[in-house]
Image 1: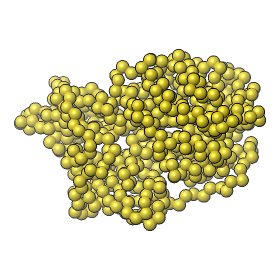
Image 2: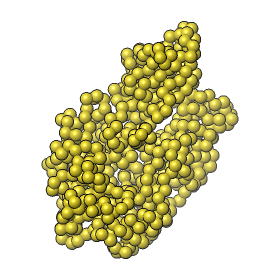
Image 3: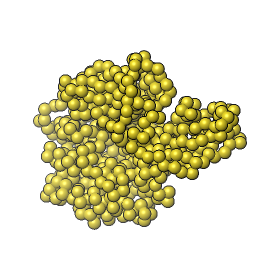
Image 4: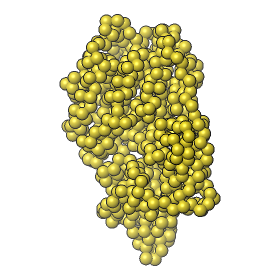
Length: 589
């Protein structure tokens, strides 16, 4: 057992002074086969601790059903870090932000329209308590007070940016203590006055998050906390990307200058991020400041390790600075992991979505109004909505009121347009005499993970209207079909006759195979494709979109198998040439 404590303006571990030099990496953004590699590279860079969030929605995807295996095996990740001699900073708040779907909150919370988030409203606290009752006993043996590597735990995440409910913060702290979390507890916030006023607790270590001006930030912290250690819990040394924006890059010269100033002040620091990883599947989040902006699949973050785990020029520059303040380990310095170009993958089979509804496992649900994903018990993916529109109507405008987030609109199976949360909300078409079948495919592109718009239900959230915009009417009598795409094994494919196949503007699954004699990292490029989701051997790699900036999807080698591998692409708008490429270099913009 060990004691990690505050001693005046610094920390001590078993009575010996220690400065935390930590790096963030999230176990849920890295395939488990690579956890040890990434942690060893962290240690070799001179870091003595690793920090990770705990994503509630990963561990309790459906209420009362808990998952702690595979990429969700947080206990294994923590034990591995300890075995490598690293301390662990854990941030298990109900909310984590992290550019992660819904900030880590489980989507099923939104099935209750009265649910209040991140406050002391009793129904929300009840859900948090049930989660803690499962999580905290798993963490207890991993605390430093139990002989494990966890030395500190966060109470809430940047709460002062969201609210000021001290009863809520006290509930979380008290629940942790009651659950046996007898290690150092802390909060983390920005350096604005209102953030520190709303997000901190008396008697609890307050830490700061910033990317520059450390002297100014720590001076503000001293006003609220004059006698405790200085800690930058998130030193933002890179940044993340949204679809349609430029790829963010922050040069290492500025990063090392700010780090040098932080360390010269005697402060502890946690790099956000040391290694970003990937938003596999549908787990990317979104922001909404002026408008809705979904985050891309890559979480490379322009960090010290690349998305595929390779040391960057920033890695070596940071290591040099750390060496001025701490003894560097004798660990062998890491080399880039091998990459392989497997070449072109010809998609030889195709399955239309419209012909595959009954093979995707989710029965149709009738309703008066179109239902949201959450009301349908669905977390991620797509929803197909269907109803009848009367005719004739010339120049009929089909309006999707508050669609979240992007919808393709069809009449009798014919594509007529796209409605987007951040753009146009309608399409115009002629309805023939006798009417037509209206179909709408809505994609959840990621729930908002930060700020006041956190309540982000998905699907058609208000209704659909048809007619002239001045004289339209709501449409009632719907069929709703959840499409989680969690299991594609039941699809029935038909052969594609030509590489230059006809390109109907309809959603379809494309399948091809490739052979891997050696299983190494590779990058999937889908030039000529429009928008969709890619799967390798059944694993959801994430979204692609011609808007960029991201042009390739990372395919970790452990997802491959020696011999024949399967690639499935769910494409929303068709491709002129059904060919993908597996290359040995990433393209992030």
